[in-house]
Image (cartoon, rainbow, N blue to C red):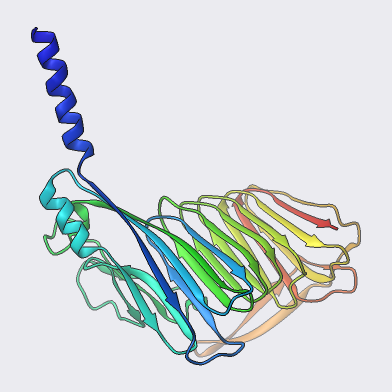
Length: 306
């Protein structure tokens, strides 16, 4: 009898703990007020996946699954109130972000708060990003009292430029896009499929996998700190190539790769002149846009496919 009662109590406790969760699906639809080749979608996620797929329509279709968990009802309700989908419509650019009292979102916000640091180092974000707060015990920063995740699934016109980023518990999947792509992750992988535009892909703990439907016409950069880079280009690739790694190797199925002469770049630095020597540059066939590959612990695989 005592064992049965204990089993019931443990079951009720498990139900109580598992009940402190909330999930909802948010759907949005957007159109650009000003249409043109500069149209861009920018997604700034923190916890969760981002999936963006190009299609033949002319609207941006957004689905976000928002999940909040907390150990008490009070904490759960606080998370539901504080964690929201943020939207900024800039006529030719649409930005989606996590609206939270802990991480202020804005443009070119200075570090004028004690215990804060900003995340604006990536020039491809055009100055937009979060102002982080490290004061995790502060009651004004409630996300230390609950957990949250936002998973984005988005459809965009194939000609729209896309910038997508996430930090924890998520991967980036971008496909069927014929415009410029910037993809930044910290604790996850990046997968780019059936793309043809200029590419900047960077992750800290994860792999970078790229499959081109058409080779990029502009300079592109691929970086992984702890992971491999797999880049599949179409037959007939012509480009300049650089590779840098601490514990990685470069492999390629392309035979027509030749080293280029050492170049010296001269530029202004402070009150003096600085010089940068580039000696690890190669040419694929007749040359073309620069493809810059860099890893720390990982290999690079460059292939040509039909």
